[in-house]
Amino acid sequence: MVRAAILVSGNGMLLQSVLDAMYFGEIPDFELVAVICTDANAYAMRRAKNAKVESIVVEPENFPTKFSYSMAISNKLKDMDIDLVIVADYDMPLGVISTQFRKRIIGIYPSLIPAFVNCDDSPVRAAMERGCKVTGATAFFADIDGNIGPIIAQQAIDIHPEDTLQSLNQRIMEEAAWKLLPKAVALFCQNRLEIHGERVVIKPE
Image (cartoon, rainbow, N blue to C red; front, side):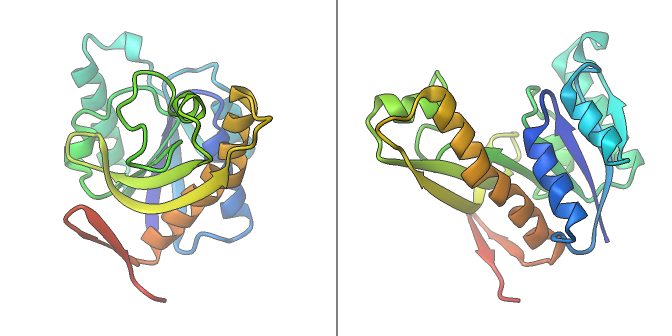
């Protein structure tokens, strides 16, 4: 059984994709031990409570530095014997979490990596302004520095001529990210992900 925790900051839409997959039995050998949130008023907290998952608030303003904050989170994760850390709309640096849970942190990015990884603005806005015809989302392992590491899976969607920034953001979430995150977590729980340098190999069932 893989014991997991989700780090979240806001609405919790990606969190909900995991909760839904759990409800329908789509993630085998998986236990969501806790949802750790940076904001007591975030809607993600309500999602966790509705699903009867322990919700923990750790507010950054109560810590003198980002390093001390990440250390507190890391220690809490270790105290709970967490095997997998899921990053879902989390707005704090991973810090020491990325080293202490190396190869055990999964996140989602709203582009087809390597496209628009280091853009100053939203990668969704950048894709629209560049005139891209296709965009999507990427599930990845965090690297030792807490940045985007090896790619687990990607889901592409077409950019429609009538898309706005808001509508494209929504479609990336609904048509790509919501599918990718539970899929990546399930593959991890099935022990089907092998990291070879910068590549992830998905083993057959």
